[in-house]
Amino acid sequence: MALDTGHDTGHTLDDLVRAAHRVGTAVESVIEGKTDAVRLAITVLLAEGHVLIEDVPGVGKTMLAKALARSTDCSVRRIQFTPDLLPSDITGVSAYNQERREFEFKPGPVFANIVVGDEINRASPKTQSALLACME
Image 1 (cartoon, rainbow, N blue to C red):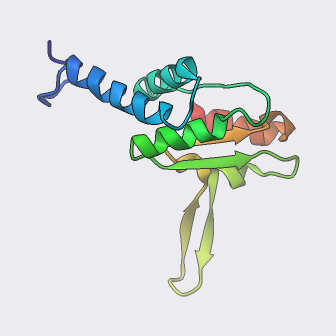
Image 2: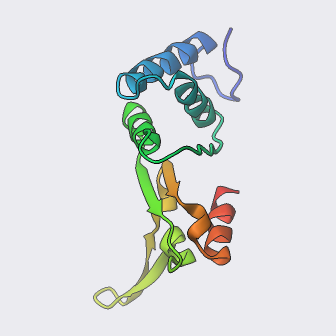
């Protein structure tokens, strides 16, 4: 059974399942005992969605994101939310380059494939809104 993606890639659903299994095995070699979390993260990645993992500190949430990124050749960035964090700290900013005499866009951490947000509730409402707008 071939995937109907709108263009002929030659890949089948079985290929996708095997690739997802390889990624899961690679991630679980780093994160032990979190099979459900690994499967959920892979499913969300395939669906191009977002996942919220709430847990106590030190149980491997950031390590899960890093292992998943490494296993899929994706970029990963972490945002530590603080009360003084600005929306532009997340989205990026245009800065003037005097040598080129033009503005350059400096992308923020949301331009990574996988973004880990820590302690989102500590940020201002405007900063939280900027994150939600990016996720949309």
